[in-house]
Image (cartoon, rainbow, N blue to C red; front, side, top):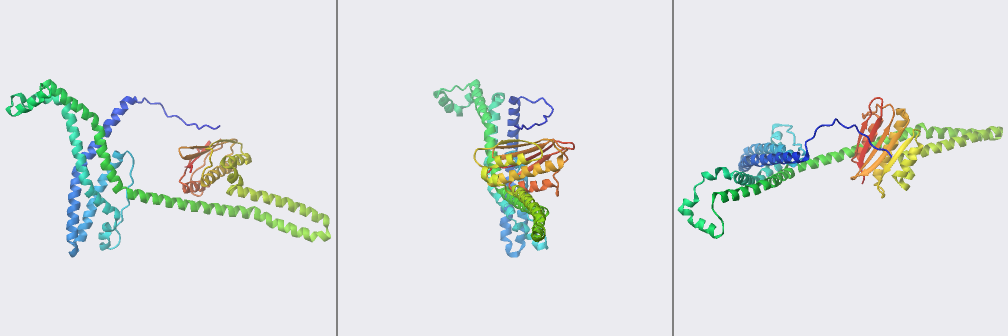
Length: 441
């Protein structure tokens, strides 16, 4: 079994978890509160600007001035949306994509119409309209909860400054009602009651503020970043397709070169030997038999080379018995001793996953045999959390790099095509560790 090793960083004194949690909670409360409080005036400004600009622009379209007004309004909405997007990573605790707006190019009229042709700019304007009522509710809830919490907790410090309800004739009915319900109206009771209210709202404060902040932030995420996320996903899929096409092109060129340099040359020689043996049958039968023996050996070598090439593409054992058996056969044929460790689920993986993993190990072992001067190679496969992790490590000279034109570039393209990634750790002098991760399904 092969176990992964890692260099542990220098030990540092860490804060206990009971101390870190309140600090994280206070930091989160500060971010959420700042977001809801600053979002309210920005929401008012954005709502007023967008509503006024859209109304004025629509009314002035008949004289073409409205086009410029609408363009300016949409650019202002884009500015407000940019401020909102700047808050979202801190509130949502994760990065958000930024949309790619249309770039103003061409003649002045076309540049003026660019904001009107950009769907994301219209989404920014719509967000300014929809956000206003939600920001108002968030602001009111945040201010009210903070007021009740702080007011209740500090009530004992300013109760003395309030008018004495017992001396106010207008409050006589209220006092009588409280006494009938069993409440005493002494200062101590009032302070205790208000302090209890403050404690309750102080405990609820982080959760209430977090809820309204998340509600407002999720609206911004949906309207201001969803289209950008879709564009990024489309771009990633396009890159994956291009990587797959490039990987297949490289594999086909290499296969063509290997066939041309190996089996094709042997077949040409085989044809020449058979023709020579045919001419020698009548004049020199003994020499013809010797030539036929050489041709038989050449045919056997050609067949073995064709089988080796087919194993590099898609070996029959991989399709028949699965990835573990195919890797075991691959390790047995390696000129460098291989320590193989496979931890895979009982059910078969997806064919594309098995083919890609086999290709990675095959190419890595071929590079080890050709370039590393290694005496031992370790191969480990683990499938966990929906990802297949392939590690190939050797004790060779190192120096392997991920660069265009190198042998590892084809592995990168092949993994990129299946939403995988490749990392290489190969310092000069070794050892070399190649790690590939790809989806299990």
